[in-house]
Amino acid sequence: MAIMRHLARKHGLVATDETGLVRQDVLEQQLTDIRIGFWGVLYPGAGYEIDLLFNNEYVSEKFKYTANTLPKQLDALSRFLGTRQWFTGNHINYVDFLAYELLDWFRLFSAGTVDKYSNLIQFLTRFESLPAIKAYMKSPEFISWPIDSPNNIWGFKKCGWPHNGGNALPRLAKPYQAYTMVTIVTR
Image (tube, rainbow, N blue to C red; front, side, top):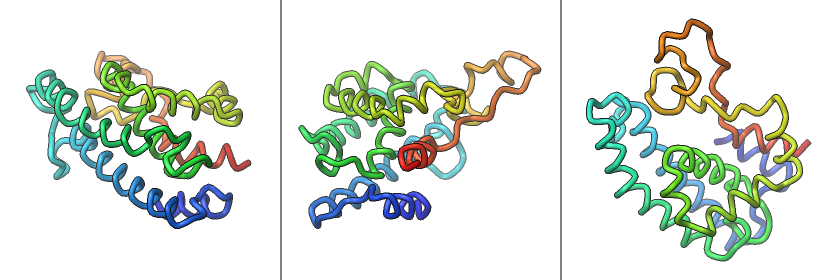
């Protein structure tokens, strides 16, 4: 996170007034909490709250997560964004990159759940429409999948390795796209 903050300060992707700074700090930490909770879904046995992806009850646990936990988190993010263009106001900020990445993961994990929040969908669309982001997402540098390691049931499986016995190594999982996208926008 320190590198992200450094890049954000260097390129003017931070809030400039007290209200924006408070919103920025609150959102950064809230997104961190949400991400850690979701990692509990992705990385069982790592001390997180839910060991979903290696759990024999994956389907029922995923259902509980998407029915109970995820809607509460998305409700809070939707209320926090409100009618603003970006989470801290009218200017894009590094926390918008973090929010985009997490919301994109959730959109892939449970599209129907995310689709219920029109302002979050508008936020995702607005972010993807930024000229530098749009160009990056069309480039060969952009990795849309896998988004996680081969050790998890979700986030890697579409590549077919190792889960379906394929012997070709897939491309590496995409790095934290938020960091990559900040560097693309600031070129």
